[in-house]
Image (cartoon, rainbow, N blue to C red; front, side, top):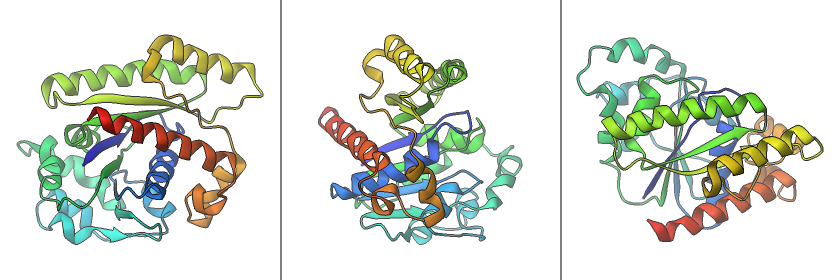
Length: 253
């Protein structure tokens, strides 16, 4: 099972959009995907049409439930979900004095049955105990980056953080790719930002860029991934192209 954290410490980067629609696009290719939403905002959970006001994921971290018991099916074939909830907001304080708190999720994931090809973790836009757990659990990260010049400085800070986690907690962690998101090809600014990304990070940047797309923006309101909501849209085309690139990386693992 490939374990991928979708991460960016900047809000509005396309993180949740990528988690949901990459999962759905991989599922179209008959990959079984388990999505874990560890963002207390629960945007991924809501996008899949689920609502969880319970303590399930919170209790997973404090060792009172088994991970298999909190997995729910989504309406997308081949995609399962561990939903988030607002209870996670209190987790930082609860685990502050816990020894080994940063490896709890990793230990739980190791208990999973081997029936998924991909584990995709949607991280919060902050570097706290939840994000550190995701980076300790994952073998790979995918970084969505908004096509805005200010996003580039935030990306450098994020990569510094990843290097620290790699050195101290998870030597297997690597960057599988950077995804330019919300790219408006009508503007020179967006084109320049994508060019700068490719110049600075070379083959770490996926060939696919996710275009600004109104249908993609509408999809969460209809609780469907873009591949279901508007299968012919630019958003669906782009995420399917990204999924093909991610699948091509399988041979390297």
